[in-house]
Length: 179
Image (cartoon, rainbow, N blue to C red; front, side, top):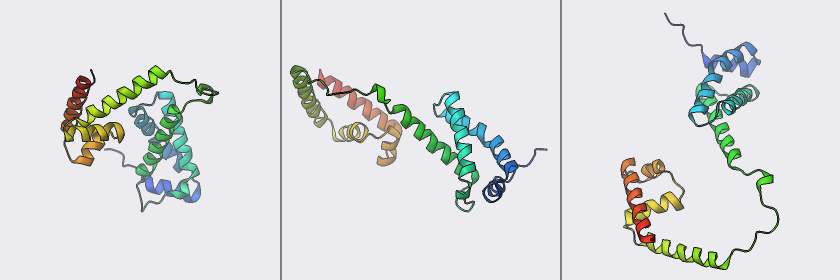
């Protein structure tokens, strides 16, 4: 016979209302490894996932008064915190460190390079304009709208496979036109 699941909401309410350390400990034992696994599946390394899971559980303790069982399940609330921490972590990884930033004025670009880039940009603009409307629309959404293929599929109502095929065909046509 399996042991019944604890009432996570009741434990969370005890943490929220009474600062109950035993309830927090039960929540920690159950959720911390799951958060770590969630973060690792999302691409974090084990050390970062462990640190982030610790941070999420610390947030759970510090902000327990914000938990409302009528609005969300404990797991939903905790994994929302974990998701937000993961986003914060990814943003920090993409941000350059101050010592990596260039100091002083940037050197003037070479005029020949600037002209070549301007000509390539004009050629690309013409090539994109010559694409069939459905392909052009997808290229614009993917590269200028910064949408993922899944987001484009949701937005347009087209199957994901169709989006992928049209983008691949459009990119092949652009490569051919740019030669």
